[in-house]
Amino acid sequence: MADAMYEVEPTEESRGFCDCCGNQTRTVWGYVHEEGGGTLASYFVQWTVGQSIEDHPANFDLVFGAWGEGTSKSDRCAISLVHFESEGVPGVSVIDANDRPIASSELVGSAKSREELIGTPLIQQVFAIFDSVILQDNRLR
Image (cartoon, rainbow, N blue to C red):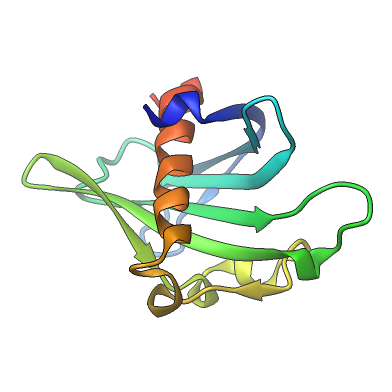
């Protein structure tokens, strides 16, 4: 099970308004650690309050890579997913991080495109991180 691989540390949250519909949004964030090890990523999940992910998918952005003393933004990249539902079945898909605000964050040195990630071992790790966050961050229930 993916949640055994990673430990999720929820931290802060904020509220805002959706650019496309004007409804209230909520963003939560935190860190993902290797079990018994160092920080692997920070995550940001944003959704529109009161809307289903079928009507209004949620955004899931990662700042992935090395953290801590002696690291810089060049050691980290932005990776973005969209969490949706189609015909009652939830799903997740890789999207181009360059199209998301996370791409211009001072925390990252680069942003990954969908094409750079599909079919790589890294994307399997990213999906395991997504699963861990969804299962362990109670604010997402």
